Length: 283
Image (cartoon, rainbow, N blue to C red; front, side):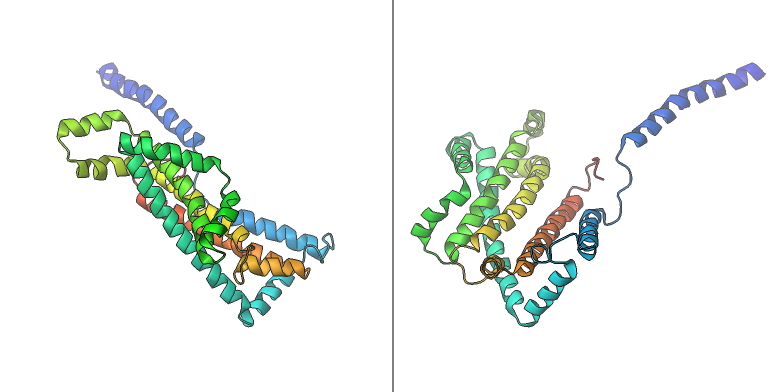
């Protein structure tokens, strides 16, 4: 009786041990729990090293002013209204260009990813455009659109739409064909097919392109605002270069960096909310 009663218990215990070990190994391979405000640790360490090196006299104040000098300069520029005007102008340019690029990238990717005719007409043209340096188009766009705001917004839109198109088109092309066959068997309409299969399958690639597009809008803006501009952060930095004001240049660079970090973090936050159903290493 004793042997019969204890045998199942021993057998069950031996069967549970491998599963426990497997779960332990899986937990050990994962990156671990997300650290709070982890993306601020690197920038905070950078500024700490900058401050320590400046206080120790290891940096030339004329070339690389101390962090507190840069903050003081930013306060002066903001109080006299110069910095606030330039910031709003840069935000407006980047916003218009990003909106146009986002619309163009999504529209072209959907047309090329969901239609063979659209792919034949669009994909090769976009890749040809990608092979041409976008900033090399500036002289031609100035001749076409003048030296005002239009050519700046158009260049930003081109820089933005290319990564959005490429990543979204790749995500659409990478959807497993078995899902398409399943949708056909289930008799899904075109609209339901797009809503229930295409959109969920393409969203991860779309967000990758969106992050690259956001970054590209700021990278192109800093160049464009130094060409025939009378306002904006790039113009402020260009004028500071002429007068040897390295602290003002660093103010502009830091603001560009903050804009880029905040916008990228916002996209990542939206991505985590929208794709909360996925189980990945990041979550």
